[in-house]
Picture 1 (cartoon, helix red, strand yellow):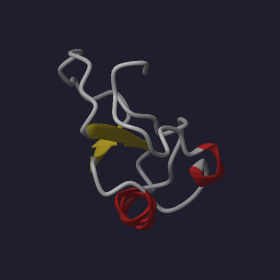
Picture 2 (picture 1 turned 45 degrees about the vertical axis):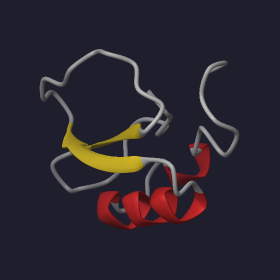
Picture 3 (picture 1 turned 30 degrees about the vertical axis):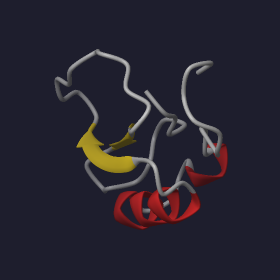
Length: 70
């Protein structure tokens, strides 16, 4: 995301991790973002924001998509 402040913007290593633990790691590695755990299939706003990371999880709270700023 070209207009976002510098810092880590994607966390592919967190796919298959626990969602809550992943959110903690994301917020620790980039203090400019708020990581929000969201159940797969839920509706979310589609606006792009540099201060937000959706952490998509399945019913077992396992990350199923690469978390990224947006």
